[in-house]
Amino acid sequence: MTSRAAVAAAALLATAVAGCSSTTTKDTKQPPVNPRAASLAQGFGTMDRLVEAARKEGSLNLVGIPRDWVNYGAVIDRFTGEYGVRINVLEPGASSQREIDVAKSATAPAQVPDVFDLGVDVAVANAQRFASYKVTSWQDIPDTVKDLKGQWYAGYGGYMSIGYDPRKVPAPRTFADLAKPGYAVALPGDPLQTAAAFYGVMAASLQSGRPNAERGLALFTQLKKTGRFSLPSQANTLVDWDYVNAAKAAKTAGDDKPAWKAVVPADAALASYYVQAINKKAPHPAAARLWEEFLYSDEVQNLFLKGFARPARMEALEMSGRLDRQAAARLPAVPRTPVLLTIPQTDEGKIYLKTNWPRSMS
Image (cartoon, rainbow, N blue to C red; front, side):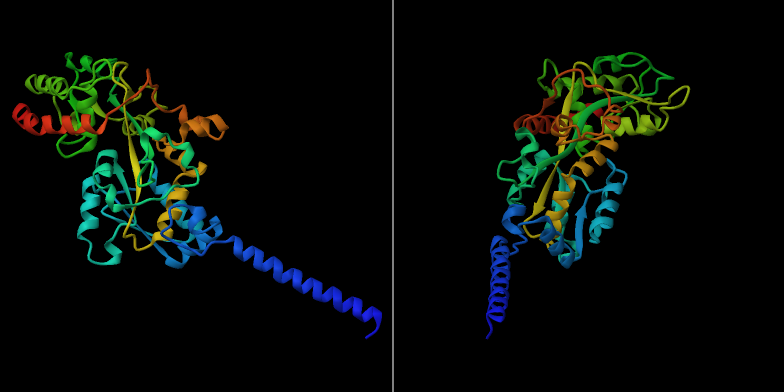
């Protein structure tokens, strides 16, 4: 072999060795794919590998998510368009407890929810059913609205508000104002069955930041006795989440005489969040984890904001300059530090109303 040939051969060998070494190093940096892992880093290493695993599964089962709820229609379409994973929504109108019941009664993979969208009390009561998973933006979610093990964590929320027709009644400043003549007041359902209605009664019960279900019931009992507790379709005033009332108000916001406005009462800024949780028995575990990563992205948190809900990462987005300020400006003003009911306060309120609401409101 000539010296020139020897040099060339040596160079070729060195290149081959370097290539093998590079490939080996790259491979060793990536963990084996574990679709049931507790984080992106542990289970997949990179978003690309998570996306690949989710696409192989091909589907995602959601439950209790109507398309017209906090802009979920746009969220679902964006996810499917971005990743090509088919979404199957089981019982779109299911309550939080019904979501759990659906999972319990499922007899085939197509009927098993991969993820849940739940009220905090239902999530806490069923935490043993959820897989721990911390999204990459975990630190942006306030500690007060997440399980520190990652079994559930807030996605979006809002404040209990009073929606009203300004053509028929003056703007209420407090819940006590609703006892005045002229207000025909409704709740969005039965407080023994509907979370929004329950929180409406509890918001009316607040005094100096403390709930008292008896006080809330007293207001609605008075409205009932005076013939001013109404059905939503007949009411000029609706006690409901601000993202519901604000969405309704937005439809007539440009009119000369808007037909609806929303206000968070100055004396009762009651907040609550809906939380995300991954089913331990999810038939599509990688797609479930991709869905959660997607929901907590800047883009989707702002999509919730466009649906008038307050995203869990709202403060972090605002501090980083990535918050959709135009969408945020459409939300009702919040007058003071919000109240978040504790689980004992929630349970106490439910027990009291279960006994006394039927008796007082029949």
